[in-house]
Length: 300
Image (cartoon, rainbow, N blue to C red; front, side):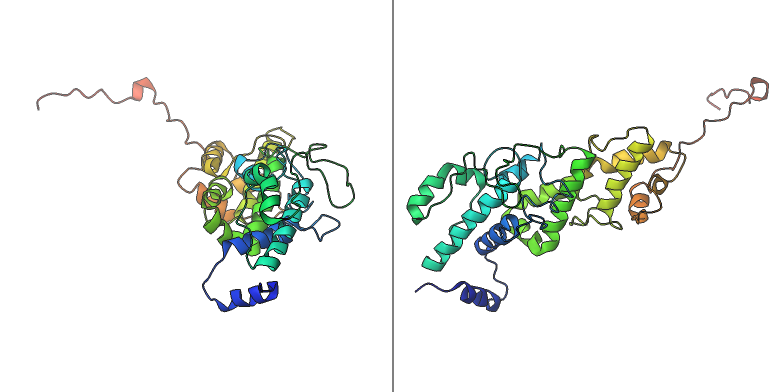
């Protein structure tokens, strides 16, 4: 007789140090990325949740590694249909566990799109067809992901959504999961979005990621570009970007950001600590009649 889910959880708690990535995957798939129990679709961490992406329920031009993880219906956008689809898949995975005592292995969206019909036969469950899947939970049941997409993920506006997502993921306890199950993804996230190099993404007012985002937004605004749809500067290029500004600016970097925002001033200062805050003055020209006579070398 298979173990109940509650018994499974109890055994997991008793096995100190054990980590079952398969269980964690399905736990996140149903209760977090799927979050099908949230009728208003606002829960942070849900693939279509309004709060998930900094107020943008979906975006275009998402990084490929994120599409590989979360684009379950393959339409090139991570949104509410992916949320509903992974929830339905995970619900069936839980049924399989209750019947057999084992979860199916970790799936990827590409694997599922290729093998969903095979999984129907293998497990005897009515796994949903992902091709063209469009079944949004909540207020707009007939709106597919491909209509009314949000901002471009490569822009400053889109960066807000990405930083919001990864902050939520890493602070939810999923940090270990990504390090263990998706180490390449974890390293790519840090390369692109870990602006202070502390191994986390923390998009709050007094932390580096929020400070970096605010600096970009207000710096370009001061330069006369009044749009958040300008290309964002990722973490791997941010030091060069801000150091170049510091070298030729006539004010401190923190002054670009309004006083109403709490920022990590030390973060900005540390990035440019080896650079002057403004270019050195040109050398003074000495009048020719005061110039010292030229030195003529010789054997001495």
